[in-house]
Image 1: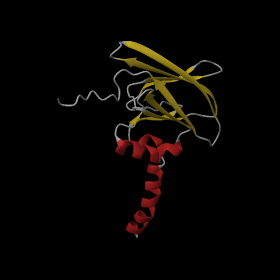
Image 2: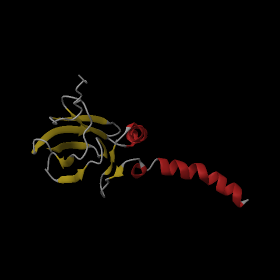
Image 3: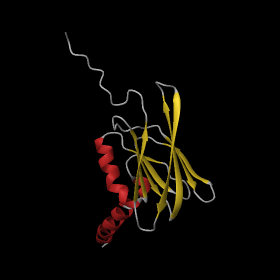
Length: 155
C-alpha cells in the first residue's frame, strides 16, 4: 500500500520541481521579489533554459552589434520606472537573462565592459510587463574582436 502511495506522488513531485524557476539550468539570480536565471553558454544550456522561458515575463539577450555574437558578464540593473527604485542588480553568467517581473513598467540598464578598448558601455531600455504576457529584449553592444575571425591563409 505504501508503495502505491509513493507511485502516485512521483508525478506530482516531478511536476512541482519542473515548475520551479530556480531549478532552470544556468545560475539562479533570484532575489526575494523577482525570480531570475541567467546563463546560455553553449547550445545545450540555451536549449534547457528555453524550456523554462515560459515561467518568466522578460527574456533578455545580450549581443555584439556587428557580429551578433552572444555576450556574457554583463551587469544588469532593473529599476521601477516610476519610483526609480533598484529592484535587481546582477551580473550575467551567460548571454541570457530571464526575469519574473510583476506587471508594471521597468527600466532595464545593461553595462558592458570592453576589455580591448578598456571602456564601458551602458544601454537602457524601458519595457511594459503585462500580466500573463512575455516580453523579449535584445541589448546590443559595440564589442571589440567578438566573433571576428583572425584567419590568415597560408602563403
